[in-house]
Length: 418
Ligand SMILES: *[C@@H]1O[C@H](CO)[C@@H](O)[C@H](O)[C@H]1NC(C)=O
Ligand SMILES: *[C@@H]1O[C@H](CO)[C@@H](O)[C@H](O)[C@H]1NC(C)=O
Image (cartoon, rainbow, N blue to C red; front, side, top):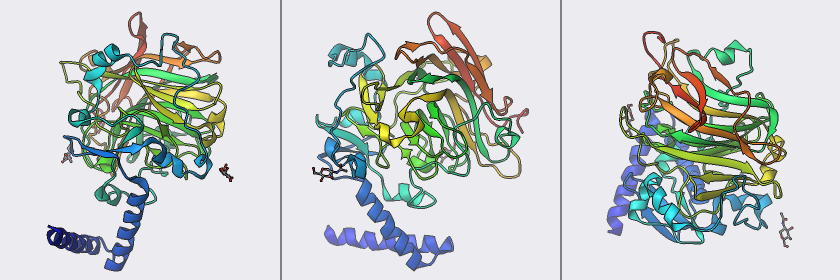
């Protein structure tokens, strides 16, 4: 058995060498990169108490809560984990375990749950594989957004370079508010599996909590769902978070792929697939996400659904957001990596335009902000923004059931978006 493993191991090295030579790198460079990949994997994949194999191919490691990647951060060496927020903006919320509520929520949980759960005192973390890191531009950039294209849309910019959504770049269809101090945001987000044309592209639907300026020092906390073949190696729809305190340059990452977010919950894994997914003309599924700032400790907390308080981003990670957010955005983003001015056929949301309405078009409903008095309320003065409405569009509205809502998305390439 051991001999067999070492044989296939050296075959793997040989193949990797051939692959790298084809890519114009020498084998020595390849070996250096490979050992850098291994060091990185050793750093981020912590020893597990238990591992659960998900039907989608993921390995979910149950890591003792105090061994999670956040605690590699020098500022967190002596940190006392907050096992609950001191404040919750939803008056009805109780932090007690509510088994019957959880029963109802079983539908919207994660794929790996069919094969087990993580014990109390541990947190589920999607294991990073060698091939995940090898798909990234470099070990250092693994788990991070590309700096080249600012990923948070600036709806107030008059810079057409940013707004043109040309041959390559990020495109958005969003609703937003700005001009106040915000201490959180909430939304119920319809879940789909958009088709991605090229593996270097992605499609996501999320909330952005923003502070600072879009150029250099933007602070952003982001959460939602995404399809990203580059990051995960498949086309599954996955729950994700992102944070940065310097406009995606040196700080921050997706999920728990760097030190930052402190997870306390043992049920939900960041980056794991969401199940089930809505289908066109059929059943619709949505997830709720709430992010809010604890007024006492200053940490930014995240809740998934009604019952799952996932954890928090410590206040010290941020500059502007250490105080409050100045803009909130909700909506979709895709990357267009087509050369020569043509448009990708990567879908946003359901791939349908907003006019299609419920069951066909994707939506955000009951969008809310946490105001200066720490109350959840409907946002005032909601604007909408898209770079090219013929490719991806957004339409907002409000009614009794859905509060403030919008439909958004589109197919990308089509006769009106060549
Ligand atoms: C952590 O605690 C130790 C022992 O009390 C102390 O020596 C050290 O300076 C502390 N480190 C930080 C970053 O606060
Ligand atoms: C993802 O979807 C694209 C088409 O949309 C397909 O070409 C590709 O093979 C899929 N990748 C995986 C890993 O299933």
